[in-house]
Length: 340
Image (tube, rainbow, N blue to C red; front, side, top):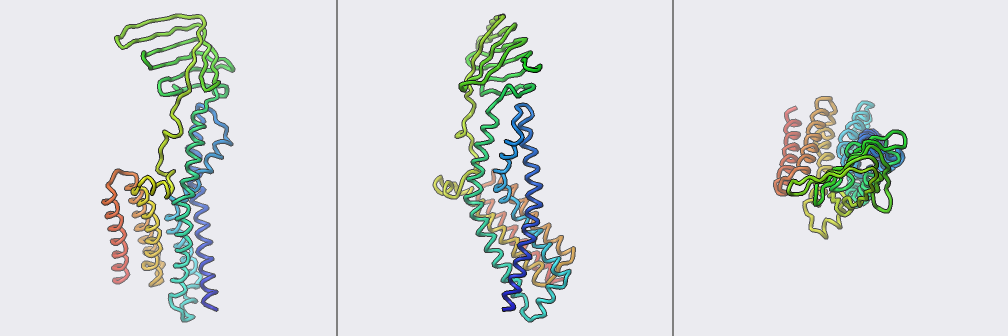
C-alpha cells in the first residue's frame, strides 16, 4: 500500500515537471515558427489570424522533435528537487531500495512511448499534411488589393511581377514572361485582378519587348494593353514532405528509411531514460558535474541524430552510428560511476 502511494507520488512529480518543461520548450519553438511564418506576409499581406491558425497545425510535429529534450531536463529538474528536499533519502530509508524509482520510471516510459508512438507515427504526419496544404494555399492565393508593393513576385513557373502601389493605383508595372519567347512588359500604370484562376492585367502607357530563340527583338508600344496569365503554380500533390507520411504510408510505399527514423526516435527516448537511471538514480548522484555530464551526452546524441536524419547518409551507416553512440554513452557512464 505504501509502495503504491510512493509510486503514484513519484509518477505525479515526474509528469508535472515533464508538462512544465513541455510548455516552456513548446512555447519557445512555437514562437520561433510563427515568427518565420509571418515572413509570408511581407509582400502578400496574409491576415495575422490566418497565420496564427496555420502555426497551430505545427504543434504536433514540433512536439515529436522536442520530446526527447523535454525528457532530459524534465527528469533532471524533478529529481534534483526531490533530492534537495530529501524525499529520495526518505524513500530509501523505508527499505524499498530503488524499487519505487525503477517502477515509476518504467511506467512513465511506457506512457511516453505509447503516446509518442501514436503521435509520431500517425497524428503528427496527418496534421502536418493539413499544415502543408494550408500553407500552400496561403502562399499561392495572392490578394493584390491588400498588397502595398511587390518585390519580384513569382506568379507561376514562367512569370515574375514587380510593381509599386500608390493608394489604389498600380504604377511602374514590370512583367517578365518566359515561355516560347522571353517577354518583358512595362506600364506606367494599370490595374491587376485575380479572377477565375487567372491573373488579369489592364495596362496603360507602356511597351512590350519580345526576344525569340534567334535573339530577334520585337518591340511594341501601347496606350492600353490587356494581358491574362493562368495561375498554374505547382499543385499540392507536387509538394512532397516525408513528415506527412504516416506509418501506413511508409509501409505501403516501402519507405523503410522514414520508418527507421521514427523507430530510432523511440529507441532514443528509452536511451535517455535508461542513461538517466544508470548515471543518476543508481548512486543517487545529482551533483552538478554529474548532471552536466548526463545533459551533454544526451543532447549530443540527439543533435547528431537530427543531423544524420537530414543528411543523405545510407540507412545502414545511420543505424550503426546511432547504436554506437548509445553503447558508448552507456559504457562511459558505467565507467564514470565505477571510478567516482
